[in-house]
Image 1 (spheres, each protein chain N blue to C red):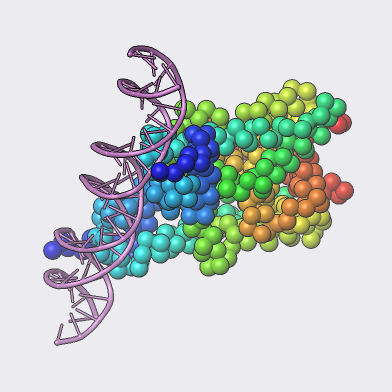
Image 2: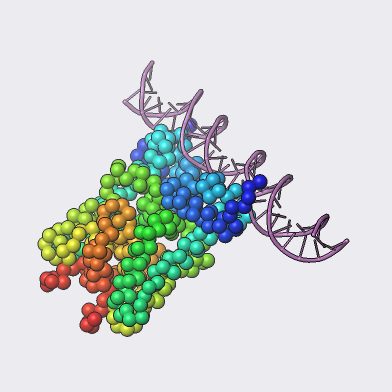
Length: 200
Length: 200
DNA sequence: TGCAACCGAATGAACGTTCGATTGATGAAT
DNA sequence: ATTCATCAATCGAACGTTCATTCGGTTGCA
């Protein structure tokens, strides 16, 4: 009937976009396949052609968003950055990514807090989006004696934890994304993470 | 028919307990009223006698858990604690509470990441369970020049954010709840929060 | 006797998924 | 160059299930 307006990739992209949008506004709950089909202009049957089940769709969407995040946060690091500059750069990108992609933030937030996530844990491998590269990066800081000589997971928890709660605070209007606030937050994290027995 | 085995309070408590347990294992999704009735041994009709809708039940449960948390984290502060000792004590209690009440942690996690939370934001007032008292406590540290002279919300984000991601890491086996780890985490947070222009 | 507490089968809406039919691109056969 | 066969891509009405909620009736205290 219709001239084909989208190719397969565009259809999948439309489904992803619609799912993110709906989950952001209505939650995991209020996002039935029927509404995804409606919002994306892709027939239900077609969605099931690409994704065997709703769970498969959610899972594929998760992987898609994770690679978006991974690509984003380590982008733009200059060769001449010292460790501290990179430390700031990555953290800032992390916050920026979530602020620029609110729907992805909502999705991750709900995905990781649902028992869903635990069931597919084996397949996910990376605990939280982008954390493995972050983990390696922080481990490097430990090895170079720049950061505190502790279990790297303690530093990951601080680094990521503050970023996530910062995004939450901004989202819920307790905080503004301003240069001053970000600068002060970076100081808080850096002062906490840095090895105080060394000069830096 | 049955001799009454529970009074009203016990029934409500049983419903709360069942709901927490089910949400913890099956998520918001897989927790229908029918299963709550089954698990709690309270008839569906009776649940609806006390809570007009499922949303009302969830909301009441949230308020209940929030006051549990509030009562817990500031408990046991001795008069002779200095600010730093209290800072550690409250943070530690925060983590301990969530570790001892895994179902509550799961519930809060899902509650706050669902758009549910946003819809009832006005009624909730306190942004995250127990944060207002935490906020006041951190503000006190700022006023006394012990903590960095910044917007208190930056410190709240750090304090709470690290605690939450720590619990997550422990829950997902990346981290152990050991004295050493908690001590090192406290050092990270304290070094980050403290006013470096003063002695402490 | 009155009324709140209690019960669970019944209801209707909403959901995930299926399936038989249709379309359009590709390439082999004529 | 045209026909035809094939098959992946597409579609959405229909199906069976599950859910939140209702309601008419029962129980037991005051």
